[in-house]
Length: 517
Image (cartoon, rainbow, N blue to C red; front, side, top):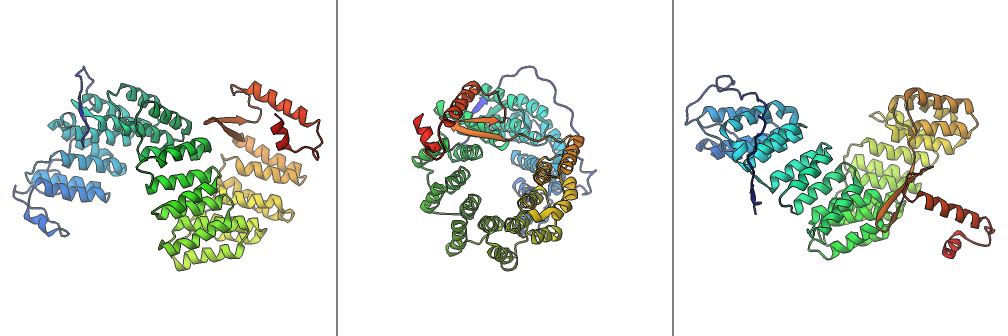
């Protein structure tokens, strides 16, 4: 059902910037043709039988779908040369093609807008006007998007949602919220655009705050809203809110939605509650490949190697073919369990049986597999022979192993130059290298690494601890006094420390002390 239209006021508005014109038929490489010309199409024999707007639009849409925007515009030029007038569907198709392939469509889209504006399509047709707004927002030209929005005579909810989404996509959160407040009528899609936009930009707390406001507004979320909220919960580790969302989902008609259940599995695994994740998976009436990947990877990342491998082998009986993500989970499971031979077997099965080309993630798992088992030479061999340049994660896993094994000094030396060439602005490898030297009493070497960090302007990022209390996430850093309850937290920590010192460790366990309070 189409959204209701809103009649816009007609204030005095600034003129839209002048746009380059479309090439005229005489300027194109195609000569003008009679009005009864039928464009050839080898793939569709019926196309030559009917010279109509729908036929031309179908051909243009096919080019846009496959990213051939230039050819789509050339076809549009031929359409005009043949005397066939485009309709709003033709223009929406072209604007959408330009929006999704900006490298080709940036200049062509501006020219098309000039043509549409000349005919009045962009201001009087809500679908064309909305497509123009979306195109410019994807180009990052929000000023023109807003001008186009203001010049539209009729707007609907899709128009408002498109501009709000464009603002959020480009990081203009204040403008998005101002437009949200101006919107005459909001629906589930409007709230979802806002929540999902915050999630995609990594602003998870803001996403959950707006989800709470959506609940207060008595607007019912759909499954897309729930997926966005679950993603925010998973990234924050807000287990309590995740449980509430699961209870909410169980009462809705989309409780058996595969995508929602996949998100629940991911959320529980990332919150460390693999038992609930397995229960959700086992109770799913239907599963997808993403379902299997979520449970395999989730169990592997929680060091439940045997269970992860069990699901990995069980998916074949459900007639699912593992992909690269599945094998990443299986390799991670082998790495955590120290199953070196099994991990090598899984890697060879992936390449030889399933013909999957290994990515840097797969090679990183193999390096980690050898490194955790103390086979540092084999791990270094993988680093040196892998077909792509190793990243800081791959080298970091090998460096972490060097810190645990005393006989790794020579290998650590070889990795220094690689570290400096990988990510000069990253702090992880520098800090780890410095700690390796300091742990072995090589203070001069440790000092040199820290001096190198200082010269490059690299600063150690502080670690953050977080805790969920009554559905709210509280974050702390070492020495942090910015939290509103910092004074109370420190006072309680000092009290616990004082009282703990009165007891002998053998006579009172920590959990008993907690119960005492």
